[in-house]
Image (cartoon, rainbow, N blue to C red; front, top):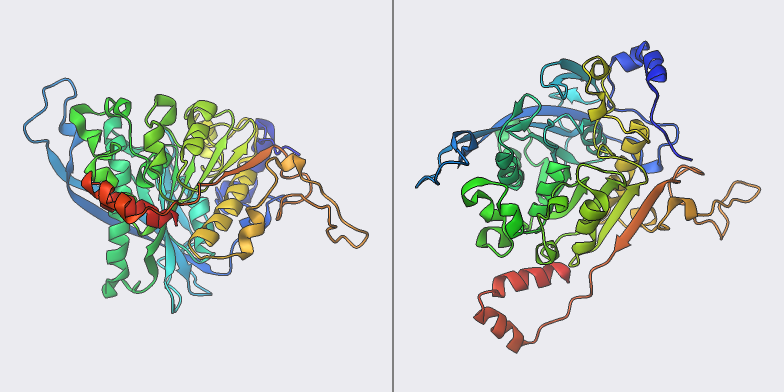
Length: 460
């Protein structure tokens, strides 16, 4: 049963209703899989205005001019929206303002998170998830996912990447260089915020147990942060060797991934269709990854793009969820705000084949299962991650009491027919081979001891 997108006529009818007028981000399809449902926590949301000092100022660089002796720098502003578990019964504003894809039209979105709600009394901190939008985008593009995860016991920090937002779209090179840097800076800042008693969030955030989720260009950043070092071809996309810090084998890139980041999720990651990684670079990915994509993604590419990244990350366990016929907007964007149709930018949020709310729910389902396993060590979710490769190949079989029979193989958590058109494919890393002491001495002789030991430990 394929969940097709709403037609323009049907949308016009729905837009006349109060629910649609509120531009809600918390929609739940009648066919939503089990783990898409909101969790037990109330949700709060806060805004932080961060500044990363002494970063390269791409607005002051001319790609056609000779490389200056010293690259210009500036203090890079990064606005972050943080969703988090809140005290039960929290009351307050649940709407927030943002911009559409045109960078001009300001709109109001409505969710469940209460602005500046108090966090619950905690004995253990909540794992951190960092969200990175596309180019362009903003910190609210995946707010449906952020709010949903916070209700399940995660702190979610969503970044406005400077030079990449709807109303601040700067040099493309800035995005390429800064995505992974922004993610790492926000990780450090969340650790600082967690320890700042004046902010009232002390002990809330477990930054030693973190994940990165990125969409499109954010997915590119997630791959780099996970250890995917760039190729020589990629370096040509930014002036004056500014991308060299992310090159495979460079000292700066070999320091990644940060041991605090345990997993990454890449939704429609951009870059492989432009040969941003070679086999060696993709083999450098060191943490388990979940990939999500539409098979008709013409922006990032599917067979020559997203799927090649998934296949090439040979050093880790990884899963690819594919929506057959889906495009670049698969899973990530909020449902199209009603104003986006009049502004002519609704295509930035919708998919020609799939219903956005249902796709978002499927994304929430699988990302919840993945993070619960990788960050919380839950084995309860294993049944949601051990599936037939094609949803349509699963057998739905129940007895006269409605209980599943022994030959039932349909996807766990999905209603009958609702997994049709979706694929779930998994590849595993080879078992680690312990190196004898003499081999370690040889590796050390070539200057790679620290890197080899770190990778060996991660894969063990």
